[in-house]
Length: 141
Ligand SMILES: [Zn+2]
Image (spheres, protein in one colour):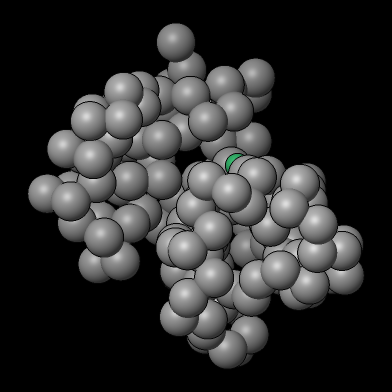
C-alpha cells in the first residue's frame, strides 16, 4: 500500500487494460517463481488519504476511485507480493523492497536504473541495488 500523494502522478497516468495488467503480473510472477496473484479493482473512495493500490496474500487490488492499473503501480505491488512470499517480515518500503521494485521497473523497461537510482538517492530513499534483487538473490537483512 502506498499513499496516493507520493506517486500520484506516476500511478494516475498511462493506465493499462486489465488483460495487459494480468499478463504483466503473470510474467513477473513466473520470473520470481511465485504463484500468479489475482488482480481486482475495488471502490475504496476518493479522499486524499485513501490508498491507491494494495497487496493481499493472493491478490493485488487497485482503488478504481482514484487510479487504474499502471505498470509503475503493478511493479510497486508486485514487489510487495514477491517479498511477502520470499522474505517473511521484509521491511515495507525498505531497501530490499525498493530494490525489487527498481529491478522490476528496469527489467521490464518501465523505468531504467539510470533514472530510478539517482532519483532514489537524491530523495534519500534506501534501495538495494536492483541487480542484487534478481530471483536467486533475495534475502532479508
Ligand atoms: Zn507499498
